[in-house]
Length: 241
Image 1 (cartoon, rainbow, N blue to C red):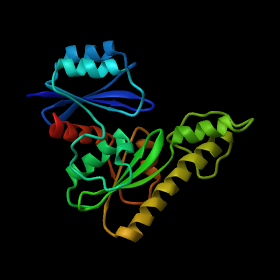
Image 2: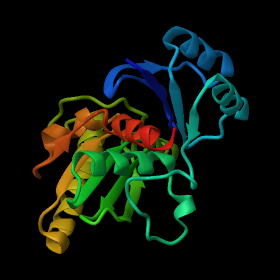
Image 3: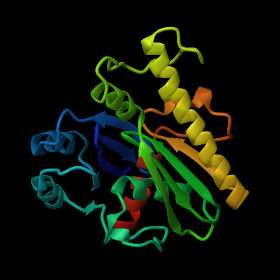
Image 4: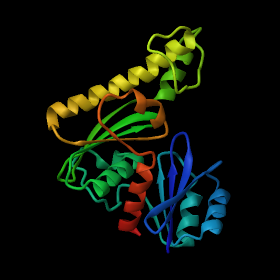
């Protein structure tokens, strides 16, 4: 059974998704993006093809390494997709958003899909039932909100997220948790409600590294999938390598 490695270089984490056939077998967290780290994974898994999705300024030597190793695709403006992008300047769409939309179209074809990703930023990505990625919106993510309140005030501390807290905060930390997490949950529910008013029937898909903090607080019906982007990257790899 063939092996595919899909590298996902995000703003906060560098990951490699290892697929055996079309099944996600393992996720590897990379310590850095040095070519030596990539070579180590290539030696370990010996993939038949690779793909790189990057939203950071990575070392171009990585692309050379993957190209020399075997069939390789760099996700970008020339990528063949399972959807169209009838928006202004489609070349500016982030590679991560392309991966998310590809997964939604692959898993739920011919349906309206709103894909919400909770990472450094929250991205809302809407693809209609004709396979047209129409765009969406972007707002600050959880860590960005915590950090901005610490950076832009004199006394508010930088806190770590926690899974449980009350609606009414009883100290500074729980006030910040309630404001950020419940505020974001209300934002997500509100955005989904706005799409419901316009499109009536669609799938709401939730993903991203911060997913687990928000699922308990959302009122709307959603499909939560931590690995959605990797499934999309694999679908893109199949179409392009």
